[in-house]
Image (cartoon, rainbow, N blue to C red):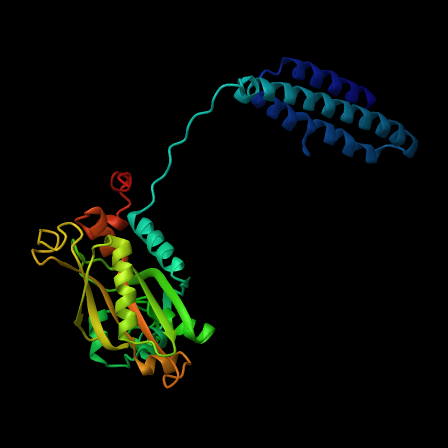
Length: 340
């Protein structure tokens, strides 16, 4: 058996000297050093010899095993370095410049909006996209079978119909209730995020879109505060000469409600293709928070009042960057994104 060990050692070292690639080393390792290799077979045969012989052969076998493993690892390192391009690289040469990515225009507008409102003392809040029917509708003064639900044809999750209790949120307004419950009053917050509606998609409508809305709750908040805030926002977004026009509109969660229109930033109110010759761009929906909504958020409407407003981030980005098709935002088209 000792002769077998010596013969195995000679054969292994001869083949190791001839190895020229990692593949040769792998074959050598499997044949001689693996659990089922020739060296392991010899070691397992030691159980059949006497104790004295076993001790002598065991010591010799371990020495040979360690010797072969050390020489194998040394050759493995040499071959690995020879095949590694990094080992011969000139580290003084300048590296290759990697191309920068591009942010989606919705992200650019969202960051601009967040910076604006943070400077006005607002906090940025977030909420779940998979919402309960209660937060998405009922707590916002839209009870079951209210006609306003027809305006937000909804993706229900789970069981079919409204009994499932879970919906993909149709607006960011559910987070209004959540931040009221969490922080109480007084409160200033904006809520940007993704929304979902079962829309027939075209150049101006998409089933997945982005909104940002805000609310301010304190004592004696009134319509004048709302108008003043929206004027500041319009001038910061579209220029200091921007004017605001407010027209009544119904929203279930505010009372009274209005549409905010700003003078067209392209034609300065003179009339053009962008504003359809009216001189005005419909940008924001707003109003004073309905007392029932305040109650749902755990705030006493006899003590506090509030205002709320909402923008469509997709629409703002389309206006700012003159984008003609809302579907471009979610297309994943690099040619589109590389423009920004």
